[in-house]
Amino acid sequence: MNKNRRLLQQYLKDNIWLTIALLVLSILISILSLTVPWFMQYFTDIIVIGGAWENIGTVVGIFLVIILLRFAVDLLYEQLMAYLVFQKITLSVRKRIEHILIFMECKYLYKKKEEISEKDIETILLGDVDAFKNVLSQTIKFFTEVLKLLVYISILLYYSLPVGLIVCARIPIYYIVSNLFDRPLSTRSEKNRAVQSSLIQKVKKIFQSLPAIKTLQIEMRVEQDLDRQITGYCKNQSKLSILNAGYQELNTAINTILNVLVLVLCGRAILQGSMTLGTMMLISNIQSRTTMPLFFFNNYYLQYKSSFPGISRLVRFLETEVENTALRSDSPHFETLSLRNVSYSYVTGQYALENFSLEIKSGDKLILTGDNMTGKSTLLKLLAGLLTADNGQILVDGKETSNYELRHISTLFLQNQNNYCYFDQEGSGGEVQLMNLSIMRDVSSPLILLDEADASINRNRLDEVYRFLNSDAAVILVTHRDTDRILLDYPNAKIIQI
Image (tube, rainbow, N blue to C red; front, side, top):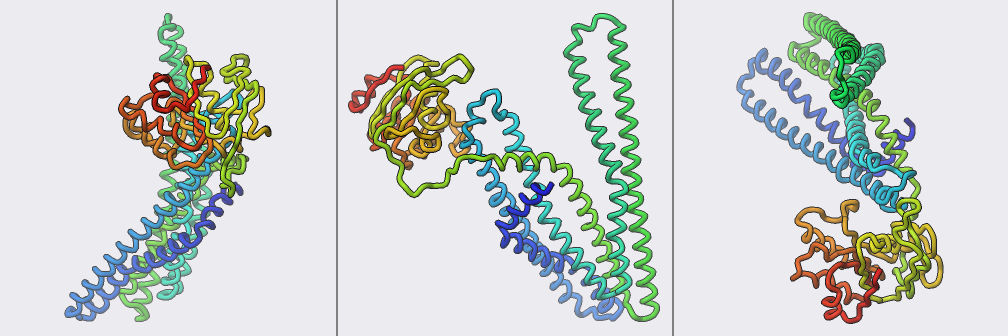
């Protein structure tokens, strides 16, 4: 719970000025929202009772201008909220997640048994980030509702101290009532979800076992089992409905009693001449508005509670320790890159690459060929620091290196870029590959690794791939195309058969 709060606080603190701007706008919206009760007060006291009908055009005009101003401020508030939550904070969280996924020794991209599952990552990327985003926006709105409530209570205390105190008393009453119903409602809802899930599983099993049901006795036993569960679910559902109805009715009763008290106090003040009819309408309107923030506080608590597991999972994931990938001041460079008896297996005992050795010099142009499943793509992933060799050594300028160092000097183009969100995905296969290659032309890596970058490219546009063979960097190209044709245009390239 504390870690969840700290995560929320961290992102709000990092964007403190935007948050303050939202709170200021919320105060302005609260004040402008009082245009309606103030207009009612003025219209009743000055125009209707006072008979100043000549001012009605001016009053209505000012009222409409303020309504338009309120609309503009409200729109600005929502745009600023969307910018903060979606473009600033959610984008930052997603980038952090992607950063971890790419640099966590590729536990997502290239999985083994003990590594994180694809389903877990999908849950984190989709559900948990959305849960955090929703709670974040609700947290900001929570503070705006608090400010609204303070503005409303301040005005009520100004116009009528007794009414203001009654509205203040509404806060602990709502808190007590919501706590009385919160636990039984939550318990019933959780029980319903559990029974519903059990029912779904049971029905699935029945459908799977239908061919095996051969006797009436088995069918009756299945039917009785289902009947018992469905009956239990319906009974629990009815109790949940009764609880909900009781909660709503009790809230309605409390509101009615408080509204009557407010009207009694205001009516007495009118009879005594210390309050006008318009002021009573203003007070009645404003005090009724105080119920909305109180309902929101309870809903916010329930939403935060329901989102707690997802946010906790997200917090744990964001705490994943990865290598320091801050940009380095030195330009990446190497003279020689050597692989000595390197082996790697995706499945224990089945080597994708075994006892492989290779030496790459700065500026070399190598073309890897060979049958499918001979380890060409695995070799590129090892050179790019996306995989860690099971055996053997990878040396840079004679020194054993880390995956981080390899990632620092290399840029890899994979056959399937789906796992890398910073590559484009729209268009045909060849168009996507060409767009992704255009991104790579601006990189300054001394080692460029191309895994079948020419696979889906039209024959007339192959030079857009092979032009990398004219760059200053060392280039390794995996291809199934005609290597003799490539060598005609790029004679400095060397063919390596795997």
